Amino acid sequence: GIRAHSAHPPHAARRISMRFAMSVLRPFALLLGVVFSALVVAAPVDELDARWQGLKAFEGQFTQTQRDHDGTVLSEGTGTLALARPGKFYWAYTSPYVQTIVANGQTVWVHDPDLKQVTRRPAEAALAGTPASLLASGDSLGKGFDVLALPPTDESPKGAQGWRLTPQTADSEFDRIDVWLRGSVPVLLTFSDPLGGTTDVRFDDIKINPRFARDRFEFTPPRGHTVIGEN
Image (cartoon, rainbow, N blue to C red):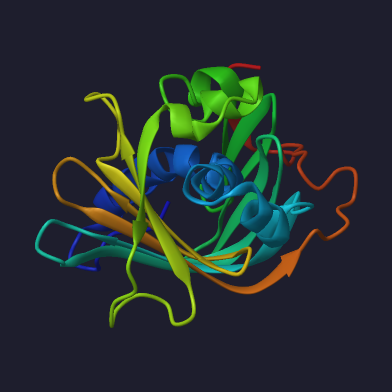
């Protein structure tokens, strides 16, 4: 979740923030699944093994930018992330303000420290109706997407290879997801919505297969915070 452009009043920015946080929650939860499945569909087994076999997790920094249909920036933020299959992630915004989204595979928490508020939902309910549900079952996302290789352009990441994932159903939250990898490392994801808006997520300083502490993907609401939602 990221605040809207400063032209919005603070309360409107907060509404946009929470809505945006929950909307991007699903694609980030399935980030590794998207990357792996794109490779499964687009590459032969030998290339697949060479590029991503053994890639179980990663962590690094991100820059996230949301634009409307005409390219106007609606929100922008930066932070750190950690992901591990299946369905575990830690997504922490550090600017323009602090917000953390944590999922352990069963529960999703959204923590807004400035509001002293935590939103908690079962992961299955939070991700219902999205391709993320395929992560838990182990199915390939290729079963739900048409996948095409993308040619490099002047605007694509240098040295990266891209794939376009187009949902096979009309009720998907996104029209397409463009995935760009440099080797086996994710560089850029672009989510395009039915209204013509886009969300770009660029990754930097990625570490492959780090060792995470056991509690890396757990969250305990701080004392004095209001907890909203289900167990």
